[in-house]
Image 1 (cartoon, one colour):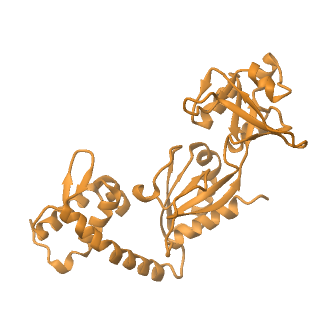
Image 2 (cartoon, helix red, strand yellow):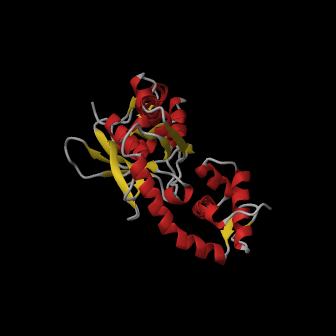
Length: 307
């Protein structure tokens, strides 16, 4: 192996810290936008110069040796400061540029978010957006994301949550289902209908309602039905097929309500506790946020403001 002079090891050391953060050669290579082979070669060269192993490799994961852990711990703060200084200078003027990594719920991403991303990219051609759609809660720091769209603002102190838009749950059904089984007039009547719902562990599924105008006490109804899933698009599709009455976030039901394929059920009642009332843009806390990230967040918050 060709010797690498110690004064040429800055990139090697940086790549080691990224590998430690990402936990795998594949994710680290993606983060650095290099090949997995280049990533592996860089670490081998660093280990050769150090004269001892820094990484323990397995088929599924990467673990630092004690020497590797000590080195990375001592490197984190200096490299964080270098990165912040560079971004501060580079991003202080000129067009937005760089990669923004985003994760968002499946239905919201497909139906609401992507059109705004494409508009943003047309205006900022030097920015690239990498979007992962997933309904699972993803660790932003460990998986390398700059921001997430989430229903909850209950977050660790190391994160910042900014309101994006209001959202609410709606009870809906297809005209075909309602023609066959009738329109329920009260929340209690739902107990006699086929309902499509999100599973909540071993709990008996129930929906809670409050009257929009009268302010009466909340009404909770146990529901049952042939289909439950943790994905709102799947519930919506089952409702469109006439399988039952569904409780959906408004962004999943909006298009089908607009063209009449779904009808709102119990419109004078509001559901409580089914979904959060606000969607948030969440990012890890940092004293220096790249302009591409902060600019993208600002764009989204402007785009989702009510007209």
